[in-house]
Amino acid sequence: MKVNQMCQRLIDEPLSLHTSFRIGGPARLFLVPQSIQQLVCALTLFPGAKLLGKGTNVLPPDEGVDVVINTLGLDRFYFDNDSLVSEAGAQLSKLCIEAAERGLSGLEFAYGIPGTIGGAVYMNAGAYGGQICDVIDWVEFFDGERVMLASRDQLYFSYRDSVFKRNGWVVLRVCLRMVKSDSKLIRSRMEQIMRKRIETQPLDLPSAGSFFKRPKPNFYVGKAIEELGLKGYRIGDAQISTKHAGFIVNLGSATAKDVLTLAEVVKRLVQEKFNVTLEPEVDVW
Image 1 (cartoon, rainbow, N blue to C red):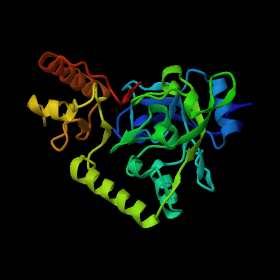
Image 2 (image 1 turned 30 degrees about the vertical axis):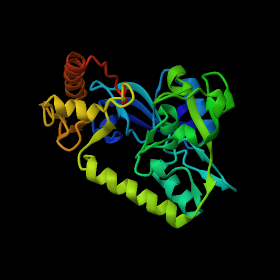
Image 3 (image 1 turned 60 degrees about the vertical axis):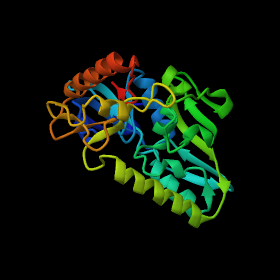
């Protein structure tokens, strides 16, 4: 199958247009499949391609990459009683709203997370006491050779990690098992979470969310960085947020090199003061 018969394509597409960080050089080939079959074909033709959804947890290199496959064309979903089945490219916040309207609880914690359901499963996204693996029933995925389906118990999720991330497997479809509840209560909880995000996070500036994983229980990275006096510290246009020190923000023209240099400064100083090793939560290409 030829590429132009397989899916939409762009040549030398700036990745800064497709990431929440507004950072990244060109993708020499940028593919946008419109079906799961097209996605699997693209992955088979370009096994070394980078996969991208909304680009909200990604830092691409300044020099760009060869091939990117974008999943946003795979956004179909449906409800079956208390289950939600969705293709990987559907936006997580949209699924939260649709579930709430049907009186289905379980996704409230994810309201405001700006990525796709596929990206959320890949990194086991979580917030405010919940994580996506809590509501997963099964996942259909491509392991590089064949399409497979596995239940949650077979997928070995852990904090901000999954078998997909460890093995480079690609999420195709997800089934979430929800719980019947009152729509008003669900929406109220979602609104509370959104208010908290707005109050505590620098949503007005480009970023990729919390830059570092929490290294251990009860160790709060943002608080530690703030104790080091690094709030507002910057390298180029990459800055430790003045609102939430766990975020690195782009003040306008930051490069991936700026961000990574700043992150290394933070890692070194946290290691020296707290004897704690930080790892990025952001997917650094």
